[in-house]
Image (cartoon, rainbow over all chains, first blue to last red; front, top):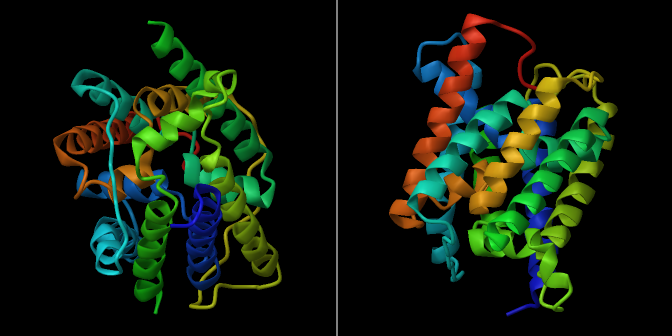
Length: 142
Length: 147
């Protein structure tokens, strides 16, 4: 096994390559909350172009099947949930609602927006990093 | 081609999260726990992931700026919006609180959905409800969309 920081750089480069592929091939920004949110809206009867919906669905499908491919290639996966049930519900609601209100999450503002030096994305990333770090600190004091 | 690119992008994104172990909430929380720096046990991995991702993504943006349209046809994204407003700050603040509570954001949530057990399913269900709630509010009082 490589050291964690090398796996981090490598995995990060793959995430960046994914964003680059979607951008250069399709002209789309790889923001997972925007993509998933677009699908949710469409399912609930909102407007949306059929082409965009199909692309969004395929991107999400790629995410969903990636663990099977990773395991097939011999990768080891450990998923350790720290938070309990009620916290997971509250966290999920905040993540889903907040990412859409703020027009993006770790991928859209972090990987994509900040890399193009969008000031909105840089401000968004600084904000969610700050509240996330503060939340972790508060939960520990609790 | 567009469809294959979208599927491949999702797949490579998920694999990148798994290679870096960032689909694992415990690893994300270990990064966000900056208090651990004092004890010398802080986990900086997420910073390396972001550095690797942003370096490649920035290169792609540099190439994208030279193209009038996408390789598979269609428009490139327009210039980034500039307005810093309450929605951007408030939404990002709420998102960060949720991220800090569980150590899960949308990409890892969907990637780990099939392997994360009932807890991950609960998180994803709540996240989709949160997204739907925003969509419902937006249809009542429409304003600027996603960037």
